Length: 335
Image (cartoon, rainbow, N blue to C red; front, side, top):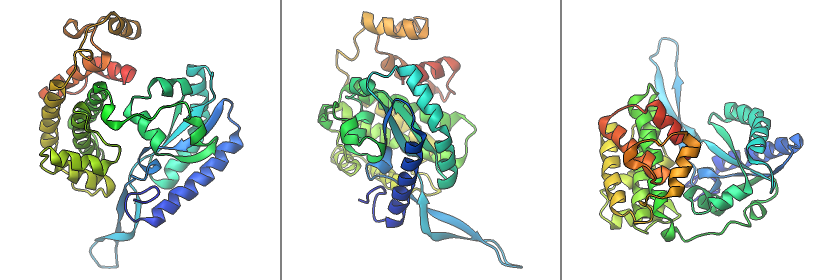
């Protein structure tokens, strides 16, 4: 495993290193109030980034177009940076201010690198509150320091938990998010690359959700592929891992196979739900009413918001229906 890119790809590792160093200097020069530090997370932060062979076109006078793969690979995934605020900073105001200050950096480097460069602004107490989420656990286990305080200081208050002890709700959240991505790919007017990526994310997300629901999750993706193989997986997840690291123009499967895989995965995950996760509570009802100003569907009233949205996603995937405004709003609020 490389420093940023899976496999042996030193030129891209250097590109990410050099880009992070220059971005770090730019961010430091901005002197952004209440910004404690910035780290690179996501795949490139934990050494699981992808590399795409660059397809180039060579045209000679009187010749047909000749497309070939350049020996120089390019980045294939977004660069996901996390901007961590100082303790005690007011959440909404600070997120908006820091996000706006980092927007020019994001735009410049997105254009320069040819992939989206995103900055997610996070409040320390929120990270602590969400420490049982996969996103937070992956971040504290795999990051690359960019600006300000080091990650070991930024994340010192977050406990590292055993992957096998992730809560069932994380399986539901994975299915919810990958189901939404699948719906966008199935029903929207998107390009081939967008569709292929969301097919791949769906296959990986369904496999990960199954492992979480059975207490078999691992932090390394190769270990998750092995765990699924031991459970009788047909190899689709392993092929999706390969595609993640070295994406091609051919998807790992078609949309209908991805849809069927998601629906089957939903049944497997729901079969493992615990009583506490499917309990109707006053707190769940209050969260929904306060944030949505409605009671929503009666059949799922007072269930955890993630479970409620997941049930709606299931119906849309089953019926091949585009997400309506209500589902979009629910997902944006509780995602």
